[in-house]
Image (cartoon, rainbow, N blue to C red):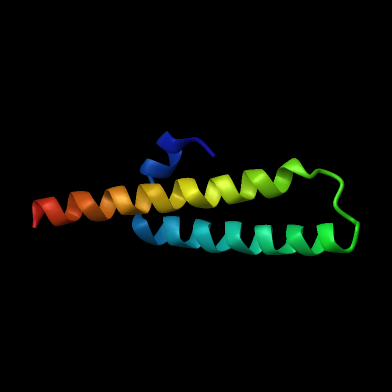
Length: 68
């Protein structure tokens, strides 16, 4: 997902996206452990996506703290 798309979402939507990405990473790890994973890059993409969502959540929190 693009960073600009993520910045347009609300913090609640971002938290939901983060939960989905963490679940996806969990499922991909299980697939890898059982030898069923075909696309190994999917694990990397899920982890990076989660990190990107966390970064944007922190940016929004910092902006809210500055305004308060």
